[in-house]
Length: 299
Image (cartoon, rainbow, N blue to C red; front, side, top):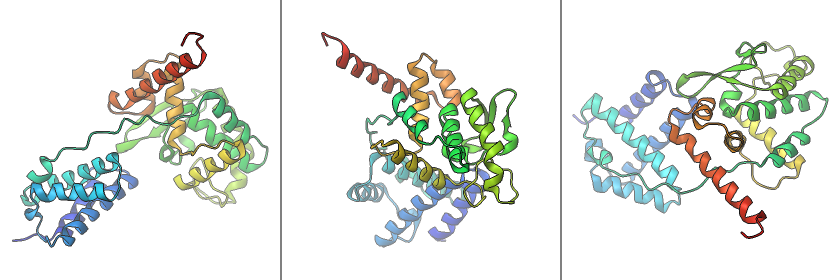
């Protein structure tokens, strides 16, 4: 009996959402990747998942390259479909050899972008102010830079997650893993000012315990944080393109450049594997090399 691909897809998405407990964003990525693959099969006239052979899988990857996707995106899509087939094999005994044998494209050697310390100071100066919005934005920037947390982790912080006495915040990371991250006196002062002078005004009598809120009093979204950061960039007259992870990259790079050990930075970032953190050592080495070449008289 042929199992409709759409049925397997729906069951798989329920599986990653409920049993694997992935974040909303991760589930959406899996859903989009699998849907794109099934659309490809439909275009090729294939209606049975068992009909997908290795040549078909290779053709799919070739199509992704033809669409101009990056190697990282293609690698993620292969992982998504491979995981989908592994699930289909376990539940319906559908042959998953095609994607199990497929190799990931070689990763591009591209180092994460980050801000230099002088640029971070420009960002901080750009959002100084006593109005409720400026106090909130300043506290957001301080927390991102002080902790290196992801934007999705920032927007999930609730009032009870912060321990003012110890100067730590409980973060719910990827895979619903909890970790405690310290923050310093600068972030502490910014948070205190925000909560005392700004948050209640922004709340507009709405009731929830999320720390950061938008101008309507609702919990701040990831998209809202990106908008705020873009506004800071304009005020600071910094012309490079910003994305929220740049502050996370800056956090890790500045710690390692100042002598922090790799394992500690791994814990702070919430990386499961040390290899994810090691990329920042390449950044600091390259930074040192450029500094040497630009400043040493006999370079």
